[in-house]
Image 1 (cartoon, rainbow, N blue to C red):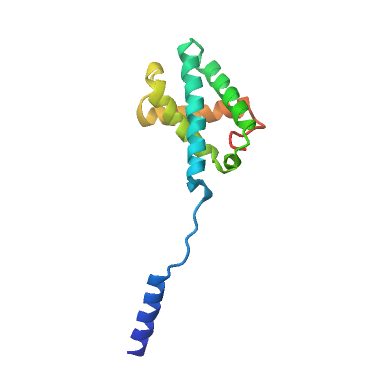
Image 2: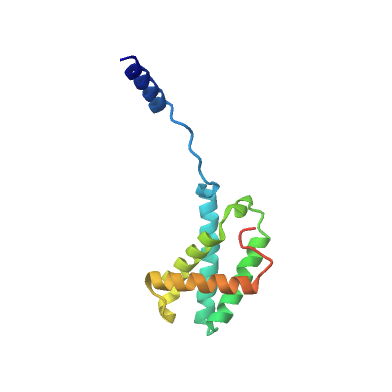
Length: 133
């Protein structure tokens, strides 16, 4: 009976005062907003270049360089918390939704293809830079 009372006591204490959980810094809404602005900016530049007749490689390199220049001169301290993989996912989603149909990218397959293509060209275009740092 004594064990039951101790168990009940500790259960109630734990229930009323749960331990503090650990959260990633990227759950900060300002980081998500910044990441959204970056992906919208990139998508706009990429889609506009495709509409102007650039090849997909030329459009990709141009959009990467222009977006990277904007980010590198940004004083927003949240940019250091952006993960490259998360940003690549969001950029891919934006591009496929905005203009992907014009060059055959549709759905999850299109997003996955564009993400891998984006990361490959990004590494070649700016090997010493990082969108988020």
